Image (cartoon, rainbow, N blue to C red; front, top):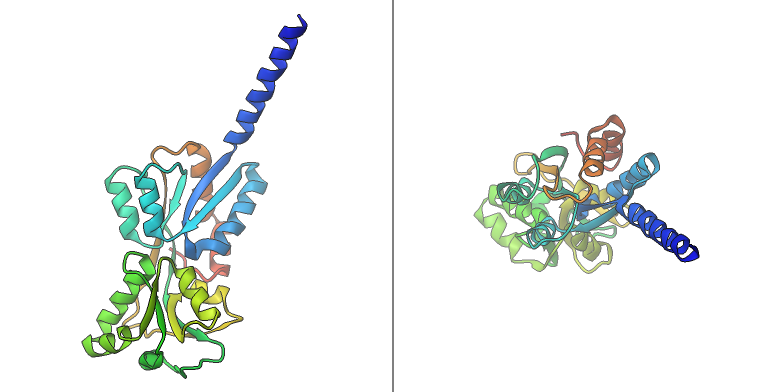
Length: 248
């Protein structure tokens, strides 16, 4: 009898542990969403009791992880391209745009290259941009294409490094390892104590759309949908706006 009681207690403990472990969702999010998603994760945890694990990286890297079978519940991308590829492969449910962003130029606070405007970007002899595969890198090339071949050539001639995500671009500039970089406005706001922002003219700039979707094989689909709903709620949109994102 004693052995049966002990066995029952062990089974109960294992079941309780399994239930506790299941009360967690994994959110794959573009690196530029760091601060706001960490904030939203805390809000969601407080309201639901469900833990949120946020995996931050370049959208292209997260897409590859999902394509290679990584377990996740939600994917939030910094562009439509990588989300569309997953939707075409039926790896995510219907995506929805929850926020927008815009690229800007950043320079160190002391602005050693004396870049005073976007038109003077070629003064930056050490320019840092994203690799073409990452959304910020793709947007950068699109912007430069709109400026004309001569300006584009002068600017790209000064590229010192191409980074795998936008936060690596920001880091290079804040550490003084680059004269300038192109990041999202939200990233510039996150590093505002160490960088100056230079606006990109509207006629050549792009608007970055951020789609989100629940994965088709999400282990915690119901909780994942609840997290996505938070993004579109009044509270979620206020927090995104506070982080510098524009409404969808």
